[in-house]
Image (cartoon, rainbow, N blue to C red; front, side, top):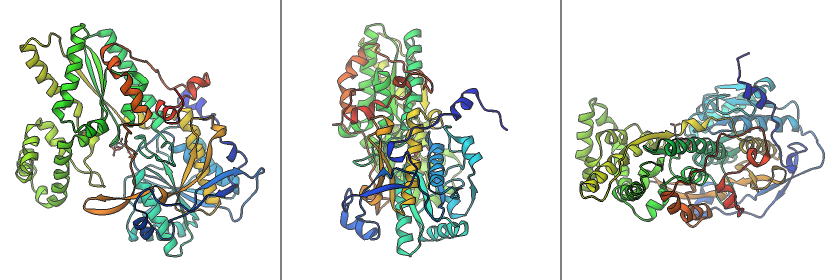
Amino acid sequence: MAEISVLQRERAAYKPKLPKALMNGAVVEAKRGKKTLSAGEPETIKSLFPNNFGNPVITFSSMGEQCNIEPALNVGVVLSGGQAPGGHNVIAGIFDGIKSANPASRLFGFLGGPSGLVDCKYKELSCDVIDEYRNTGGFDIIGSGRTKLETDEQFEKAKESCEKLGIHAIVIIGGDDSNTNACLLAEYFLAHGIQIRVIGCPKTIDGDLKNAQIEASFGFDTACKVYSELIGNIARDANSARKYWHFIRLMGRSASHIALECALQTHPNVAIISEEVAEKKMTLDQIADDIASVIVKRAEKKANFGVVLIPEGLIEFIPEMKTLIRELNDLMARETAGMSFLNDDDQKLKFIKGKLTKGSSSLYDSLPRQIQLQLIKDRDPHGNVQVSLIETEKLLIEIIQGKLAKMRKSGEYIGKFSAQTHFLGYEGRCAAPSNFDADYCYSLGYTAAALVANSRTGYMAYVGALAKPCSDWKCGGIPITMMMTVERRHGEDKPVIKKALVELKGRPFAEFAKNRDKWAADNCYLYPGPIQYFGPESVCDARTKTLMLESGVKP
Ligand code: FBP
């Protein structure tokens, strides 16, 4: 057997807590709510999902005693998109849930993401395999991938894979796009009289899959705790050495939930929130001005050090950059063939600049060459720029250096500016799940199994009242169509689950806005330290500040 760490060995014994509703197994009583609508554009969503639209919300309560269902359930599971702590516990929850419904049930993991389902690449997940992965981070039990599951041809092949293995239901663990596609698959199966059910689970460290129904996506809690530990350590170093400004870019493709949560956990001198930048229509130059003014003020107090948090998605929220990126995306989609002949970076840059509009071309020209090249790297399968590859922190430092040099000449700045850069992303995505994520994920998996046992399809597993102790959590299923609206993507109207951006009128942002001037001027750093798996509940079971504030509880 492969060697495992001491912590991993001890942690394997952790028994995730389950809500009361699920304590007696996955065969639970399902209460049906009223008919539902969609988050937006109900007529269009209804026309696209005639078989799923309007389904009621399902709430589970325990039936009191364990009972078997017949026949045994064969379930397939897919991990879709970026890793998020707790994925293995979702799978363990599904496994234990279907076994509780009937011990002869079987779980098949499709390998490497949605493509595994299409190409029927799978492995059966036995009790031994599941036990090896309980409470561990990562998605390595079956791997993940970013293949989009959206064509009829793929759906047909998915059906063939399921029929070959005698699978009754598929659970797709993914973000907003993957859950939208889970619903498309559920609709296709219903429309073609195929009896296979499809259930989704809300995953993403980015925290942007949440809405009136879903309180949090799994992985956000652990990832933010890992980043906050590291930011706290860096802040303490800054406060000890007193000679560096640390610019820390944080993952989160689009929304700034991670940056905001980490700011609430660590009290940095500056934290940029992309949604505020967009709302105030700020330019790159204005953002740099704001940071420079904090640097200047702190220098007056001889504090030539500090910590700046930058959300990874910032670049796409700056209106002028957004226009440039949109033009680049279209251009690169249109000119794939033309560009494939250009091997040399200089040729590529010349080609691109010649095709941009005047405004975008001069903005592009003003950027450092490194950033120009990062902006034309390959797009992701959804056609989006891969923001994790763009070093916004370096771009900002370069602009700020120029500003400080000018201010020094005019006597407005008397300090010394020396910057260090960091990018925190992959460090947190596969961490061993916190107690919260371990419990939440296990409950999500168990709930997915209960939805399957109740013959539901087109639903997302739901576990709520998350600020309360686990035993009081509510569970059930939300019809995925209920969260949908229509958005224009790459020139086409598409059904989507709306991404949740940071609410500028929401409590987490208000808490940050109330304190940020004090955090900028003084050294108010908090040092959260590493995630604790053993010890007092107040530490081990702590929720994110975002979740507590959104639930109306003062953290
Ligand atoms: P998901 O939306 O699939 O959960 O992934 C989120 C994320 O971690 C982003 O924060 C980041 O921008 C992106 O994945 C990085 O993707 P990759 O793993 O392909 O480098």
